Length: 330
Image (cartoon, rainbow, N blue to C red; front, side, top):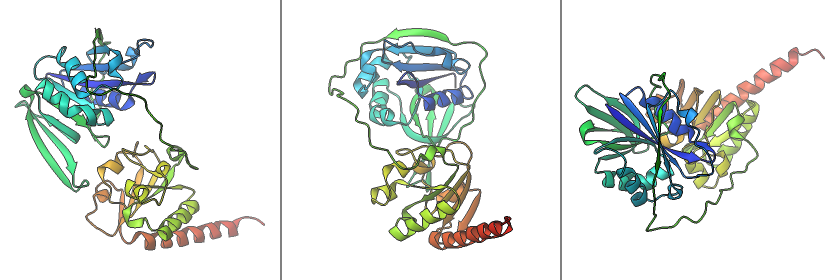
């Protein structure tokens, strides 16, 4: 690609981290990378130094209406400054889901959402892959770079970091007037995610999914997690069923975690859930369905009933604990 625009946004006093990781990837696929930062607070200075090495040019777009813009407002702001048929990358978050389709219409470019893979070839074609049907199907799209495209990128994206640029980016200040004509943002209300365990700090997690959501199965998972000095987490269906609290949910709409060991029982491994895994955890997957998507990501895969597996594991852990205790001096 000749030129790629990466859309980033202000989060509290900084630039969003997932947007920065997407910017780092863009340097490997484009000749020129332009970071477009939606900076809504004039009282704070945008930390341009965070962009050094990962873009050729940084556009700091300022305007109060950029905090919670609608598609018409954001599209109008972008269409006034970008060239015809741009290629835009944006992290697939609530803003992208809300505004992406409308912005692509205003910019007159194709729109592909929530992709997990991107490749460009010498014929100026770009192949985009997104997961469908709970991650069981890969949908492949091809777009012409000359037509441009507005692409939102999933948190489960597996692209590698590109080259680090030696020079600091050229900084361009762009003050825009953003008018949200059809709706007015009032406030954000923080969801109650308080819980007894901070999953982000746990090194050993036992995850349960739809196949392990009965009360007795979750009790078994809690017992196993205690034996392995870990904690229980879950996928969204378990929370929706009221079996565990929101604070235990891992995934795009839950918590991001970075354990050393991730034992997943009765969990299909949809990309929405797997996007919550950071780093490189050692994944052990237990599922009765040998075609479950999670086996593609697992380091060890076990085709078995999750509850039966956990009973065997508890027995083995207890036996080991007893053996260690017997060797301790009295």
